[in-house]
Amino acid sequence: MDPEAEVTLPVVTGQDIETDDKPGGMYQVWMLAFSLSILQIGFGLVTPIFPFYIKDLGMAGIELGVLAASFAFARIILAGPMGRLSDRVGRKPILMFSLLGFAFSNIVYAYAYDVIVMVTARALEGAVSAGFFPAANAFVSDVTTSKNRGTAMGYLSMGNMVGFIVGPALGGFLAQFLGIRMPFLLAAVVTLVTLVFLYVLVQEPVKKTIKDSIPKMPIREVISRARRCYGILGIAMFANMFAMGVLEVAFLLDAVINIGVEPYEIGIFFGVIGISMMIGNIGFGKLSDVRGRKWLIVIGAMVGALSLIMFIFATNTIDLLIAGIVLSIGMSMRGPAIQALIADVTDPSAYGVLMGAFGAVSNSAYAVSPLISGQIFDDTGSAALSLLIAGGVSVVGGVAAVFLPSDAGKDSGVVNSEPDAEGFETIENDSSLTT
Image (cartoon, rainbow, N blue to C red):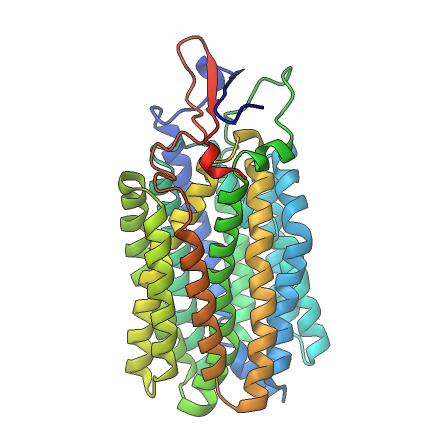
């Protein structure tokens, strides 16, 4: 196939397709973001608890790493299949199933008294939630276009951050005054409430896809149209999540054991990061729609690397908060831009599969970094080396992003899914994105 060729495919028109000049698309994004914020409260409630839980049960850093990695490994295995399933059965059923499984896993956590039960519960949580975030991202892709997708991803990230702010702060105070098991039970209840909100407020999106009588584009062809771009975005996403795995294992152990922070202080730390990211996700998401995605990804990776070096030299809570704010700026610069650019270059019929595949990339980073950082902490008694490695990985992600096309995500012509006057969808190949 000529890389410069223009391929036209018939699409559903009129009431069969939802475009961004209808208000329903962004309304559904808001509803999904609201549901996601409640879910993230459930996730965030237990974040400050794990280091103290591990310490209470007499476990070491590597065991905390295994606990974190078991979640990621389960999601690696199932993220792709669950994303593909969301293409077939719809986004909403996958979202609801994931919430139900997450609630059950937290109940198991609350009554776990040994590492085997905890790891099993964590793996179960990863397994049943593997489809949630790919389905949520694919949902947003279904109801937006390249003109407003960065903004929509920013709203989704904002909903995520609202829960990220409330959850850890609330979990820290609950653990401080009511015990370390109470947050798990509350997380289960909050998740079930989220399930009700999702069922009532979120409707299955009308997909912007080809008519059923026309075969969907094979996934290999989808990937081949932007192979180099996908590869670079995979590296950038891996680098972003690698740092989070280090922070949640080696860094938290370091903060608890060497700096002496309390559960409520960890809650405040994550709350401050969440507020900064909530603001940044919206601002930088909009900026990526106007100025393009590429340089936000590059600069965000470098800012993230700087923050990890700042964590190495932190000796008190104030130092940690400053480094956390810098980290949140870097993550909010590149996070929505990466997600939006993936959707920009992907055929609508393959959103779920591609989001699932990138979810597997993200989780692979979160599987590797906790194991490495947990073992390093056991060997050295410090998080410094792990943070230095994470900073180097972040720099690699930024350098790789330099090789993205300069116009990537800003009317780049990679995938132009707007129907023309005759009801055809024009998809243009940009040879600069393929190998």
